Image (tube, rainbow, N blue to C red; front, side):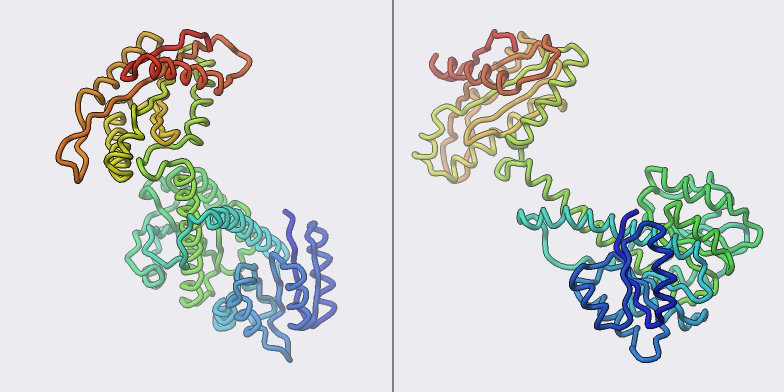
Length: 463
């Protein structure tokens, strides 16, 4: 896994040893001694992760970490604090200043490298989502504002029958609600978890636990549709560094040992909750942006961009099944006269009312899109020429025979439509030319317009 790592340590020997270990794992590594050197390197090329020796006798490393978290340019950099005393108070202080993790001395190389891989993996996922969110923001789709912590669906899994009430209350307090407890002796028991579980705290500190059961459960939860996106926090007994490294490499988002204080556990849980809120916000922004990019804002129908993509997919399906599909192009007759006589607001009301009427009289598998000012497209899978002509004439009558009631107008407006129909017979196997089929439907529509409007015309050219 590629990544840029910065080592901040005033002891040259420590920097050299760490740099050798990280470079051996193919990371791009730089080292520095002071805060000013670190900030200069960060400004020149922002690292993905910083390894910080917290025991510097001169500079305040805790204030440095807080400063990184408070700067929008550096807030997402991973931070691993090293060299602190292996006490609950020291660990909490490091976590409280913004560290992703704390590694007291003596440091397990296996756990350290697993932590590095886990933090870089999570950072890369976050950067991918951020890139998508930035693209949506550039298009004006994202709402501003930082994500807020919200209640989430959480579960506490306990291996064995020993249930520590202190842990239950700590998890409940951190999440802000009562968390359901489930037995987790075997991975199969994870089927009991409710759908859409977002956070799983697993107490795997029991001395009777077979680590293989834990590893199997972590992997199992990451493959189930209902829990694959849930963050996992694993609690292990002290001294289980090898197991902790394996948990992280299997996909657990965080691992903590039983010597962690309640405060540290709460910080870790809230960090996972905040990360979930950030991902949800970015995900919703991307989905909203995608929806806006393929939707006509006036009618709520799909737009031409989506219709063109959908048409190609339908053609590919038709090539596979050998079935025909139909394409209709619909145009409102004398629409300009409606705008000129009654105003553009009335014209918009006609477009919306017509969209609703067409939508209510099509199959769920049919696509209806607005592709121009007063022009619509319908794609109908598994539809022959005869069936398409019948469907088009039915739609024409449904529109033409019942006038539209428009707000602000006492008299309903009589609206007529003309329809051009083309059918792809799926005889070609070397690809599909959407423009050819659309051109045939347009030509048929022109015939309907030239023939007096308020009629259906079918193209008999083979697509």
